[in-house]
Image (cartoon, rainbow, N blue to C red; front, side, top):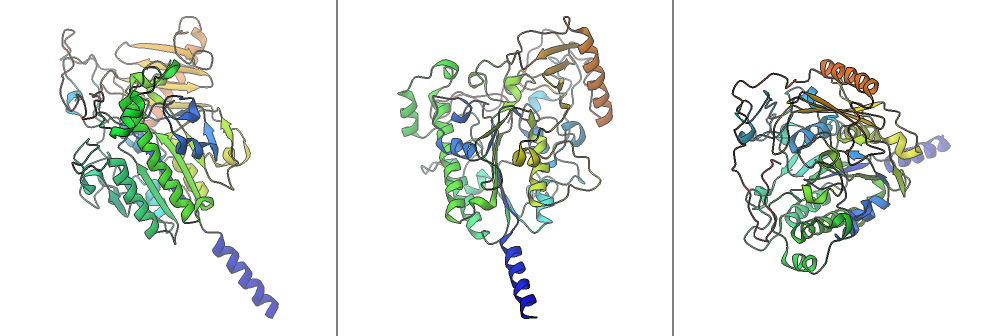
Length: 468
């Protein structure tokens, strides 16, 4: 009897020790694929992001599931392609469908996730997790508890920039406080309050979105440096903004260490879309386009003691993969009666086993900035792009030609037709909106309307006209 009682105590202690892991999901806004040092940047100092990447696995072909903000965030939280949840682009009246400069009829899509769609936060809260979003939501403007707000989508706590005293798009609050520092303070306080139970922190920085207003000392540092090679186009304002962000990530990692939670925490680091034109190096395109520059993002996952350190995986992954990865890591099931397009990365992370996925898809039937309605299939090393306004198809081998400089459509007609059939079948299967109807209001002489926030930030950074 005493032996059984002792065994029960030991088993109980083992179960108590084997707590479910915490999850910290770090999503950066507009970070280019080679901004961090672990990807090759030699101009910007990112010691904390690099340390995080070295402590786990790096994904050399990590992709955002959409070329701009809102749809990628929807994909990341649901594991679904945009053609399923219908969040295709950001809300921006400058790009409302049917304007004279648009050759085909695009779509606005959904402003928020469909009412019945479950998020990773819903699933984790159902497992007893404390859940918080600190930073950007961009999936609706509903009041607390509604389907358009984080607190109606599985998050217990939501802290946005204006909650801590910052105006829209502002990096400084007029009192000398920097936005990234203030958001990080909120995240650290919340981690302290929830350290005794498993937690999910979705840390979605406003950085590194234009217009910039960098810390003066960091701006001076980068004005004194000269970027070279692939870093040549990066501005001091941009570099200073990235380094300030890196410092906040370092504080989050330090907090995990101080709470003795590093080995109990899965940390994911990535960006919501490709970067601005001057940070994508030799890649074609930028934010808003389905070329590599608009989709390639930095990606790293760390979980010391579970994921071997120092690994680099070259197989393509995307934002849709993070929800199933998180749920497998914590032992939670995928939502019932809801298609999941992403794959869990956990087996690959633990053992190096290939994912074995045949294809990835993107669908953006919208206009925004330089972006036009496009659809995309990545199959092996081949990439097929459908331009609805053409209508045309382009074919690239992105392993041999990452700059997408050689269209193989005429050279390899057999491969073109094979992938066209596959892409069109996927569009039909997922109910994708097809921007293939001519716009009756189209005027070839019309120009895209100007307006919205832009110009220079107080720190002298370049302004931007693309939506988030």
